[in-house]
Image 1 (cartoon, rainbow, N blue to C red):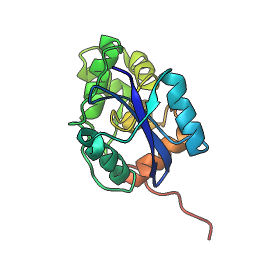
Image 2 (image 1 turned 45 degrees about the vertical axis):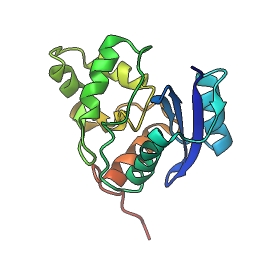
Image 3 (image 1 turned 180 degrees about the vertical axis):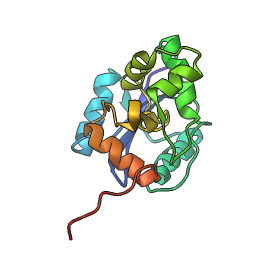
Length: 177
């Protein structure tokens, strides 16, 4: 079946969702514009068709919007199609999916959870290749010492920080005024 996608508004900008056979194959965090988010999805899924969200995934879109609005939403039940993802990455994503909003783990924590201490760098690489950010909350995975580490989504580490502030895992930066 062909991959279909939609772009939808959230409090942090236009996000995207791509699916095949009722399961999510990709998400996109906001780019500089809804058109750019759309272009990013089409680049990742050549031949994908824009379509209305199917009923079975409406709750997923609503959950992403709610999560990015500050609600404590659990997206672990979202059906994923990760057939093209390496086994190690899928296993790391399973651990990351269990991190609740407002909490974080480090790459090393996930490596230990996988029974592979010393593979923190590989976990970081897996998170950097996460095809379904937000649903697999790679933004909740930090580097050693709870440093932000990287974030490959548009906006980089600033987007990661913003999402963690919304979820209550980080305090808001004080403003000067």
